[in-house]
Length: 206
Length: 206
DNA sequence: TAGATTGTTAATCGATTAACAATC
DNA sequence: TAGATTGTTAATCGATTAACAATC
Image (cartoon, rainbow over the protein chains, first blue to last red):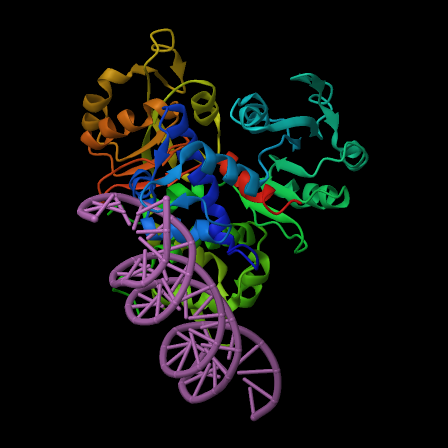
């Protein structure tokens, strides 16, 4: 059964399934089951089958799932069977670390434009380009038809930058600034906040 | 009403509340309400009141919450009214960026021991110490009584490193490696996976 | 006092889980 | 065939939300 409205929380688990399947495929394993995946991911097997059932039927009774087939199907569902261009805003310590990190482009996410407000930083080179002034953001991002962005500026600047990105028609933002962004409902935001994760865990430490 | 078992999902929202309250306090605001907080955080006001009610009564009818008082109470609840020592495992690009990032220590999380497996990297200096060989992890972390750790090694090494940390009696792990860790139930794990966040958002981009 | 906002209850909503017929 | 595992249903469980008496 495909169709209707798939819960957001289910979508959030698909990348995790994809990660595990990619690992299994790299290890040369041909078949797997919801039970094995569940064990790898510390998730119930019923949940995995239920999640997948939102998108179709991918397995066979008795034998389970073909690893590479299911991997490819989930890639397709998530639209990661293609490359994506990203804008990066903020080229301080954090922004540079992000730009330098190999994990994005190996998964098809390419940072093709970088912006900063500091005149000292503007013009510095990254990958195959140069850091642009944030004043040019709207025009450049619009012209390049970039639809995803990473925000790595101080909290105080994050909302302003976000407003510019939205004006440039960006539809998805990965926000590293420790602040909740206000965006229209058609814009998606995800948050990276390591400190919040640590603070959550210290609750459980006596 | 305090006591019983507070849902994990509620604990996860406390750092977000704390962040907003800290911001309000810095802006010099003396009082706030669940409605105002809800607006700032794009959360329902009833949820905020319900969440807080797990821990006690912090507000006053008619006037709401005193910002600095509520901030301090949440800090106390989360155990972030003290400093915490962390071990960092992995001093590659990512590990160095983490070690260099100022956002941890400004919130009371101090990286006091760093480990790596590469002989080229061992001995390099960071902050006020030097990178140690991962073979010394168990002894050093035990001796220093470190109870939280950050894992920033390649996926293939993450489970081994985790096992060592658990042997050293670490109770909370912030994992940057793109792999689900297997840990006993008394050990807490949080995951940072920017690629998974991006992959979740591309689902919604046609 | 009148207005505002809390803490809490009860209703709603949604997600997880167990169980099993279907079938490879 | 016998054993294994799917996809799905129905039950359970838990979280969110609306409403409101209490009260500052």
